[in-house]
Amino acid sequence: MKSYSLKTKITLWVSVLVIIISFLSALSVLYFSNNITQGVIKRNLISAVESNINEIEIFDNKKTLHLDDEFDIFVKSNNKYIVIDDDFIKEVNNVNISLYDDNDVVYGENLVSAQEHPYSDSGIKEFVVDDKQYFVYDKPINTEGAENLWLRGTIQKDIGFSQTISALQSFVLFVPLIVLIAVLGAILLSSRSLNPIEKISESAQEIRHGNDLSKRIEQSGNTREITILTDSFNGMLERLETSFERERRFNSDVSHELRTPLSVILTAGELASQEDDLQQYKESMEIILRQGNKMSKMINSMLEYSRLDTQNLCFEGIDFSSLVSALAKDIELTDTKSIKLLCDIQDDVFVFADRELISRLVSNLITNAFKYTKQNGSISVSLKNNNGICELSVKDDGIGISKKDIEKIFNMFYRSDTSRNEPGFGLGLSFVKKIAAIHGGTIEVISTEGVGSEFIYKQKIFKNKLF
Image 1: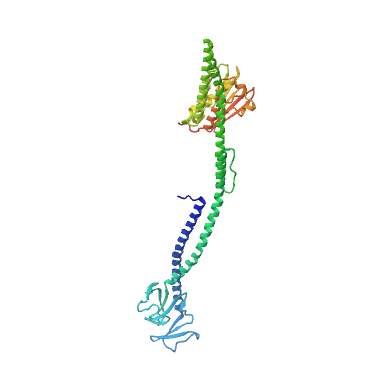
Image 2: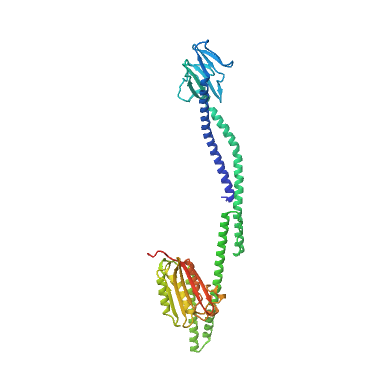
């Protein structure tokens, strides 16, 4: 089956639609115009008859008869004289006016015989004479001596239809022009609307085949919809670029982190295979086991990190005040450096969160503070509701972070020079940032090298406390 372009489909659709509308319009013109024309004809018929009634006078004898001017005429009928003023109009707007005395025509044409179709003062009637349809309107002359005198107006019914057909023919003459204008308009409109989309498609193909995700589609700026589409494509490309860059960096970091323990294991294994001394062999096995455990923990941490996006989360209203207070006390019990922990936790601060993940975020922040705080130092943990925003602050007086490292500390496996002597893989703060993003929160850091650091987590307050 042949596939047509969107431009062709739009043009064909508009053309067919205009033709259908024109056809329906023609039928409407035919129907309404005929009804209107018939109405006009009937009004003209009544008006013509009514306007002629006052143009007739009746006289009993010839002596009393007088004519207003030389153009007036008179006729004798049934022993009375009928004067017809010169303003009497026998035919106007295709309406024929005839004067009847009994059933005989006194003046005018006998188009519809009164003998076959008697008078009736009951409005407009329809009669068929010689296969022709007529509208007929009768009106008696109600003056003294005018008994049995009637005015009869007649007009052919198909006069109105002929006028309707004439109007329809005039309308039909413009239909091809209307269709042509519509088709040209559809072609122009579809071209102007779809050309930017074709350019976007071409740009996307170039980016696809060039494998350069740093390129962006240029803004055409002609319509709001195209601008939104372009922004969406560019946003998608930016996310893809960020995702691929993150994956590349992740692979590089993982390779780098695993290279050292793997090299140690290979070296220890090689020495053990050549060693005859049982004690040296045992030491080599211990090194291999220690490095293997380190690699296992690192791999498990990486798996946990990668599963954050896919694991089933259970969000609920959580008493964050109680959670932070309990975690701070539990971590304090593991302290071996005589660090003083100060807690300033506001009551009844609730958040909507996954309990396991938000607990890990808090634990990582407080554990980091204990890890990098000096002997006999102090740590302050505060929690407050700041105008509907939950603010958790963990502040220490430890080693601090240098300006060059502060923007990188949330990257996976990143460890500053001052923290390399501490145990860990550099994943703790990566977990914190990702968990914060999952909860729609933010994490900030304020630090001065050699003075200390403060980590601030912010999230919207969960207002409903009734779970």
